[in-house]
Structures are given as C-alpha cells and as structure tokens.
Length: 340
Image 1 (cartoon, one colour):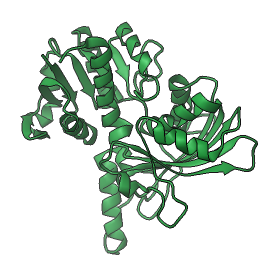
Image 2: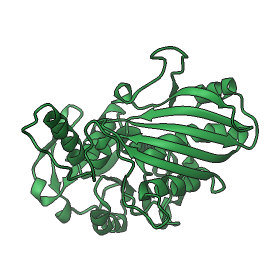
Image 3: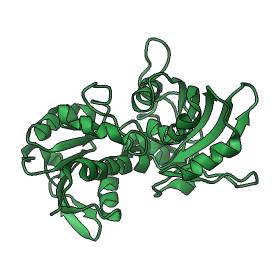
C-alpha cells in the first residue's frame, strides 16, 4: 500500500518540478492529486506518463492524504496548511512561513534527517530557502570533520527564484536590448536584470542586509549548528535556472584542501567536479535538471589560518525547492510513516 500525495500549487514552476521528481524517483504513491487555485481548475499537468487535471484547492478535503507538498506563497499557505495538518495530512512546505517556527523542523535530508521526527508538533515540515539548501549540503560534512566557525557567502541567484514572472522579465528585456524600439521597464526587479546583476533579493532590513541574506544566516544556524557565524551577500543574476555560490569557510581546525575534496566526494547529494584547467568546474547551465549539488574550485584560503574557498552550484528549482521537498517526503515515509 502506497501513499496518497497532494501537490499544492501544481501549475507553478516548483509544483511542476515536484510532480516530475515524484515520478522520476518512483515515489511509492498510489494516488497523486494536483491542486491549484480556482482560476486554474482543470488545467492539465504532467506526472510521469500520466496527465492530471488540477482540482480546486479551496474546496479540497485533505482527509485521507498522507502528505501534501506545498508550493504556494506564504499568504496562501497560512490559510491552507493548517487545514491540511488538522486533517491528518503532513504538510511539507516550500514557503518561508514556518521555517523559523521552533515547533516546525527545517529539513535538508542529507544534513539533519533526525529532525524529521519533530514534525508531530504541528504536522508540518519546512523546506529551506533555495540558496541555503545547497550551501548546507556542502557545509555539513566539512563541519563534522573540522568544525566551522564562520562562513562568508556571495550568491549568484537565477531569476527562476522569482517564479515565472522573473523568467519572463529577463527574456523580454534581453530581446529588447536587440530591438531598440521595445521598452521593457523593470517590474519584478528594482532595476534591469538583462545583462546586469542586482545586489538585492527580497526586502531590506534595518541593519542593511536583505531578508534573503538574513534567511541564509538564520536557516544555516537552525539546520547545521547555531554557533556558526554566517554573513551573506545575495545577488540576482541574468541566469534562468541554477543558483551559484562562492563560499569562504573558516574552521576551528586545519582542513587540507585535498582532504576536503575527498570528504565532499563521499558526501551524500554532492558531485565534485574540480579540475584546475579551463572548464574544469560546473556552471549553472550544466546543473539544470540534475539532482546533485556540484562543488568546484576547492582551494586553501591563505589569508586565514584555517580557511577554504569553494564554488557551489545547484538547480534551484530542484535541490533548492522541489527535490528537497520530495526527499523530505521519502525520509518521512521511510523513518516515520512506513507505508509502501
């Protein structure tokens, strides 16, 4: 007997990827229900070799569902997630709504799988921010070996992190550059994104950091270790899919770059591509559609006693969102619900 799974927000980018990944990984589901807003009622979405018609989220009864993968904004999640949880359905939420709730576990299965048992307090599990998810997969095995003191990270985040509207804006502005008669003023972003980079993701906070930067700090502490100091600069770049990060790590103990490379090669969810030659690294274009978090450019930082630099790339719609949610569902099924 398998699971009954609901995918909430099935017509969006992340919901679409959730359905793809459930099928690709052959998740033991007897039934998958695609849910969306009433205006999308009846829209057809793909689930493996099947086609599903979306049902109305507002009218749906979650009773009998084992898990619901939520890929809608925080406002809608605030309305529907408690209803699903109260009906006995475990919510795996991709929004930021519950990430910092002490009664809701924030899970990256390669990093803190044991925390999944905390779901029972609210019947909800939170999925981390896309930029955090790929970073902590890289940090955890290194932290286990040499204890991380401080992380300095600069992100290069794809427009798909803003949804379809962000991707459309990049596409339309790029075309407009080659057609001077077109005028595509910024709407999704505060400045032109085509052929540009914008050091601003989410809202500004009083201390000068953006909320995206704050998320990386708070989530790394909750997922990996509250003692790790993190400072981030998050930048939107004209890339459709795939987040990149330049990560500088300071350890309590010395960790040689060769040993770090070996540790990362053996770590779950990581693929090391690190050759010191032209093209011997991974870029966002190459990671699209892949499950792995790719690590390149591993090297000693000679400016501090115990430092390393590395380059981290991952498909933000997959490991940064949909894949991690499905992995949480797999973990929950394997460790707790044990059906199928």
